[in-house]
Length: 181
Image 1 (spheres, rainbow, N blue to C red):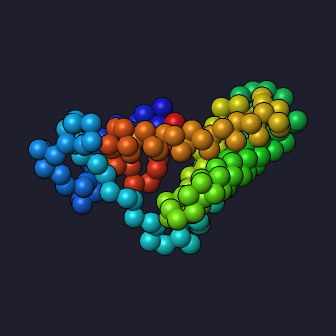
Image 2 (cartoon, rainbow, N blue to C red; image 1 turned 180 degrees about the vertical axis):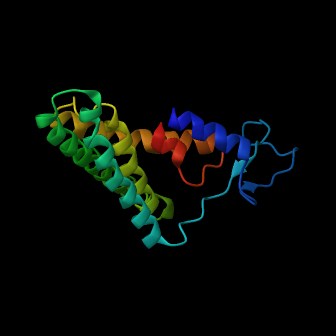
């Protein structure tokens, strides 16, 4: 729900000023197709310290949200509180680890490309994607499943961001769509 809502919001709000690469309507690519509008590279975060602070505040708040979910759900809260806390820790950590591995593999393929390094936005985005992915099953999933869920949440984050940016040509400056998909 959050991913689709943010996608619709980004679509209706439109792109930031200067986000599109200007092209004339007569331009064609190498296959003879008309060139569509494309987005420029996203500017890096202006203040990485504040970005990290905000990301970790969100992650900290996720503990309060997920740990109280067994109480609200009316299940036996004893073991489930600990299981919820453990899963809320493990899934984002696995997502961050898979982000670092994925970017490391891409750096080995093309060492000269600046886009392939691990950025603060990527790391915090995958941490939040792992937290989003484990929220629905935080007190029912075993610990090893939260590692698997978090590991694959990172790839969903990167693929979702690529689809939103390259295929749908929607400017999502905060990456909210890909975090919640």
